[in-house]
Amino acid sequence: MNITHKPLLTEAVLFFAERGIAKQMLYAEFEALLDGMVATPEFADETVEAVFVQINNRLHVRAAVFFTLDFDLDGHISPLWNMPLRALAEKAGRGPDMGGGPIRLACLGFCSDNRFKPNLWKPAQREGKADLLMIKEAVTRNTLGILGDDREALAVIQTEHLQMAAEDAWYGGGNVVSPQARVGSQLPEQDKKSSAQAAAAATEQQAAHKEQISDLKRQLDELRQLREVELAAERQRHKDHLAIVQGELHDIKNELALQQKINITLKRDLSRLQNRSASDAD
Image (cartoon, rainbow, N blue to C red; front, side):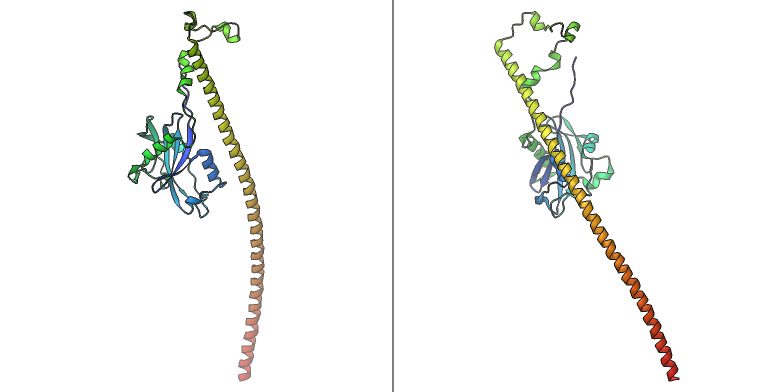
């Protein structure tokens, strides 16, 4: 029986400049950028074209969302920016083949949700080179350190080569007998050694991948906690400032009311003087 496993996709964001891709980061780093934990001074006070990509373990792009980002004077992303990149990638239409089959593509002119069109852009060419080709080459260079596909390890654990154990062996009461064992189990020693090494390498790679994911999650949790502390402090500062402003406004209102009373009194006195002067003249 064949079991189909959904391939593990790595998510990343690539930033474009006039001449091509200027910056790359994993999605966890991009989330930290969205949370305001870090800044990108090189993009300060600019609107930047970026692309959210999902990459499989064979370094093939499987989905791409072309979006724009507004940065403030300090290099932070505008807090008003809000786009569901993953949802757009999942619902995107059929796009071009970038080496691993047709990708899912969302861009300006190729997105079913009109709400996000103002924040989308359409890939074209810059410096005589196609944007899609730049993305493919950047992913292939793998500067993000995406763990690749171990072909030997996959050959060892292909499900169609696994043998079903007898029912009494499910509980440890028997042994699994493969067709090779029934004909003599004469697998060459070198092949056994190579298979064992490939399996060990696959296990080691999987452990390293899990550790990397765990480190990224821990870093993200730390950044979120720090952000919560900063937000709480900012709310308190805003609350204190609001109290001061409200107090000053109250004082101004009181002064204005007093000034109005004085003006009324002065007008009354002036009117009396004018009437008295008119009587004396008569």
